[in-house]
Length: 111
Length: 117
Image (cartoon, rainbow over all chains, first blue to last red; front, side):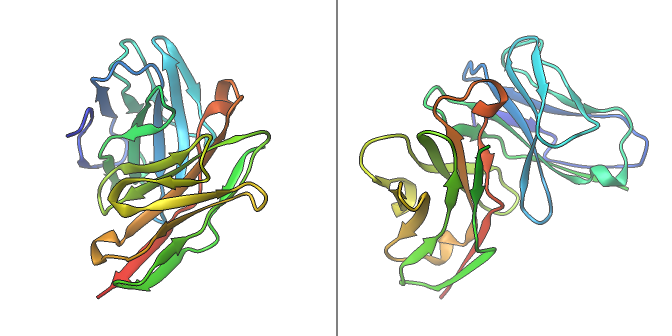
């Protein structure tokens, strides 16, 4: 039973469109993360947040932006999508015991 | 700097045989180590972790992993593989005493496990 929700699960859009990927968790976790996953499997950290009004860029440079206005909500936005943004985006929150709890992912295809 | 390596892109095993998925790490100080599994079109699921204590850690679905400090390894094992174990497996590490961005998990590139009947 998922306690972290990502919507949409699948999205196909045209170049130049603005998109927002939603991520919500009901566990009250402070630390949340966005990973981009290549078709070849590798995970890249693109954004993270340690709490409300805290956002940082991750190891992989990304044209996306994030916000953290509420503890439970950590949306990711692309102002103008391009084919190079086609990927799977995984949201996660961190338990107090250290492990990450992942959502099911949002698979984005930009035509 | 922290790093984690999964030297095998793919591991093939016959059903019923033991399986091992390899992971080595580099971190200053004592590590937190994790294994995750990913099924097609799904997010990652936590399998097990090592923080301290017994070097053999038992996790979900019959998996276990052995922490070896001298070899800086944390290999994932299962005594008898199932076809349903076929998935992507990710090893991850972070240092115990890292703050800020260095406290984030670093993931390996993943290993595709294929179990044939």
